Image (cartoon, rainbow over all chains, first blue to last red; front, side):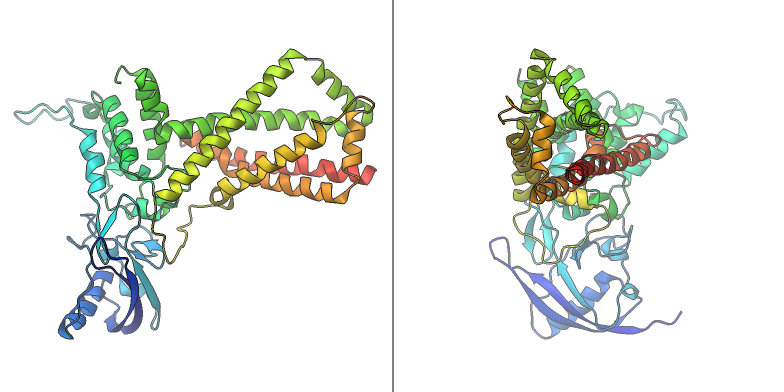
Length: 255
Length: 213
């Protein structure tokens, strides 16, 4: 496969720290190989900015293979860009046309603060995880295989939910900036498994309460999260989290 | 008692209020539509239905108070959620695109909701809080729909209701946690069919009455 090179115009959100109001600035991304990822394209732009003495564009990235959940910007109105089921680092420049103008914004939510340019503080999501607490797993020697029977179906459902990498695209995509897809995936993957059952009620209650306290919006079943999720997590998990929460709220002895 | 507010006061709790009251209204719409269809049986059938309904006496008053309470909860919590959701994203996006999840119904819920509230007030002023001493309900309805503006308002309002219900129906089930691989597709289809029935069923009555008159 031969690669070609394209030229793009970028409109990038620049914001110098939390207190700055921020603004869009225009950059040229010239001679971009279509084999590059979106982040590599930004690297090229940043190299040129650095060499010409300008401040490079700050953006989040880490593993660059779609498993860490660190990268993510809103590209032309889509978190992680317009390709389905990929993170921004997996979005290749072959999905853009020569001469395109690309608007790049940070994930926006009250619970996510912009640190600089496209870099955001996602620690609110860690807060939800911490509120979830612990799982009871016996320490010691490796347990016998199949000591706890779990059907293939349940294991698959739990694994589907556990695919969540906590990138925050669901919050960014939600018209209400709700973190329900993230929170529900975390509640679901433990609630489905016997290992997560002992603390299920307490976990559902504290995670949802923490999610609300952190200033995320309310889910109104718009389904934008599931459409934009790079791991294609289903909103079936949201229904399960609702069930887990209501069950815990009304029928468990956990206050 | 703190657990009650800690459960019902959360995002899921508030949405539970929306879902339960919303499902209540869906039941009401079905009943109201079934009653209204008697108009196709002619003047006497329609007046007879109204008489039977009012013969229920105190039961009807209880139902009315129930509906009013449901409306207060649905509107109050809905408006609260709307402002809370708006505040959850203080800086908006420059480019807004849908990933394909939203529908016309889901996008417009707060706005169609407010329009329905205004319509209900208008509707009650037309047909409920009127002097019914020397007339029948059929005459009141026939007089109102002799005016083409009324016909247009009512038809438009029924389209708005259908759009609202198209999202509300399945969304209520999702909120109470009833999402199942076997039943959710059925619920979604029933929701769309129900909203079309509501739109056409109610919406055609003003047209029918105006043609008749």
